[in-house]
Image (cartoon, rainbow, N blue to C red; front, side, top):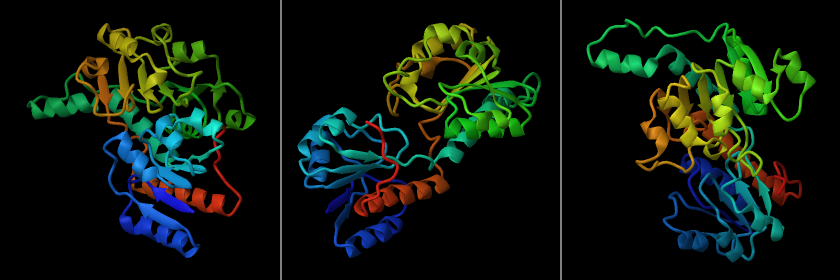
Length: 318
């Protein structure tokens, strides 16, 4: 089979080639592109003749999949697959396997970091020092004793919940289903409105799909406490980000820590959150750490080996 890693996945060429050599020893053709494609036509050319395509988090659209006649499987070095033309894959019976779990710790740690930044005014304090100021008026608040609301209690949401508990927070959560195991961890399930209305810190951890697009609407944002901290390390389009910016600028929401947007960075200059006060914005980096990139490479190649052995893993439902 022809197998191609179509873009960089955050590890050294030596690591990639160590996996590639194993594939070649099994009798397969393997090629690796260490730069991102410039346009769709280049992506089509890279995908030409591939039985297995390996990608990360950049769009792999329907027109590329339609043009890839031999494509049988896509190994995605990412948890979400909303950037892949899944409808076309379903129609052509192309399997998609993701790298679920590789960044759970990494994302959860940034969520905690965001909460500390927001409550302790870290960014503001940095600016004060650089302007020869003092600590007067910027001491902030503690996580301990506060109510943290987790929206989406999957692997990342659960890990974030446990880290917040280690700080002494009370954790409540909204999730479509409930788990006795999560209850045993001390997490209290609530309705969505209860989470929005009671939480001092809200962490959004839902996947992006047709049901969750626009889920955190203007009306739901209005239910949050006026001094609440809202954290989104999930997906940008789950939130009405114009409404979020309005709430921040009108002092109807305390602070927002945002790692994801309606598009991938670079963000357009007129994007509302770029001009909202009381924000910390990062360029979709929550999943990136030295450790998570190595875990991701291992999983994405293991997906390929498992598929070739007839026992595919991490198969996504289409």
